[in-house]
Each structure stands twice: as C-alpha cells, then as structure tokens.
Image (cartoon, rainbow, N blue to C red):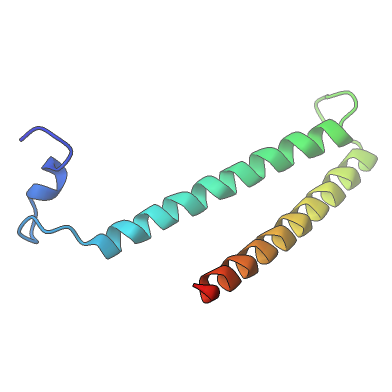
Length: 95
C-alpha cells in the first residue's frame, strides 16, 4: 500500500494508531533537536569568544574561558526556559 498511512495500516493493533505514543515520540524528537541546537549555539558563541588562534591544544586561559562561557550560557538558557514555561502555564490557566 502506498501513502503516508501505510506504516500504520499493518501492525498488531489492527491498524489503529496510538496517538499517545506518537505524541511522546514527537516530544522526545523535539527535546533532542532543542538539545542539539543548544549545544551548537553554545559551541559557536563560546568558540568565537574564547579562541583567538585555533591550534592543536587549548591553553589554560582558553580552557577557563570556555568553561565559564558554557556555564553562563547554560544558566541563561535555563533561566529563559523556566520563565517561558511559567508564562505558558499562566496563559493556559487563563483559558
């Protein structure tokens, strides 16, 4: 059978789609994508800020700068995430 529904038409559940399972899978995929984006942005920003001349090793000041930059970036990300989530919850409570 061709089409988008073909993956769900054959299975042990008689063709029924478990929307709860699919929603959980989508949530996991979104979380993984967000984590990848966080790591990529953090790497880009901290590398630009801390590494003057790329080489085969990092000197002590570059290591400290990278560690501090990543800590600050994660703290900021967590603060923004908590604030965003609390605002979402307040908006949902109003409805």
